[in-house]
Amino acid sequence: MPPSFTYASDGALVVAIGRYHESALAEAYRRHGGAVYGLARRLLREPAVAEDIVQEVFLRLWHDPERYDPERGSLRSFLLALTHGRSIDRLRADHSRREREEREARQAATAGYDLELEVIDYTVAEAVREALAALPTDERQAIELAYFEGHSYREVATALGQPEGTIKSRIRSGLRRLRGSLSEAGVAGGRGD
Image 1 (cartoon, one colour):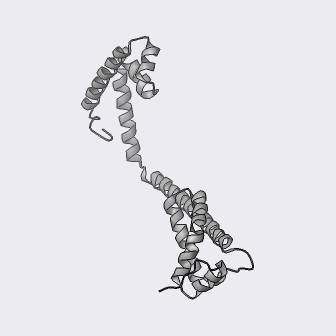
Image 2: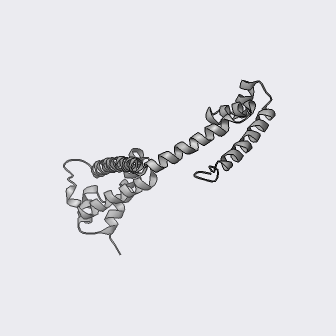
């Protein structure tokens, strides 16, 4: 049966941990694990990442117990200092990783966009402009307000002084006409459709 360390001092716990007594580590965790987790959670704001930090801190205590010096402070303050350091390291690493991923994504987006795609986009945009211009004025205005300026049906109805149901009908009718015109022009059914 493993020795009980329930009443042992923190210093005695660390000595026992140095002698590979797992029950001493379990007692240190019972006493200080909540505080370590609380600090990691407050700094990192993610429970799973905070749990990883707790595991790292107690593994470091297990593998390197002689780093704790009782002359310099309590075991809890030692563990909290380790937690703070590991948490800050994790935040810095995550920040650097995000910056690197964003930089790589920007470079890939810039490098991946070529002249052919630009010509296709311009052709599609021109076809949409022409098809929109060919719509009856009431349908064109309703579509422009709703889709290009981002207004709700109610806002479009107010802006044009028409009932909301009429606006919905005009938009549906106009979109059907647009789809037909773009299909005839060979644009519909292409990219993004």
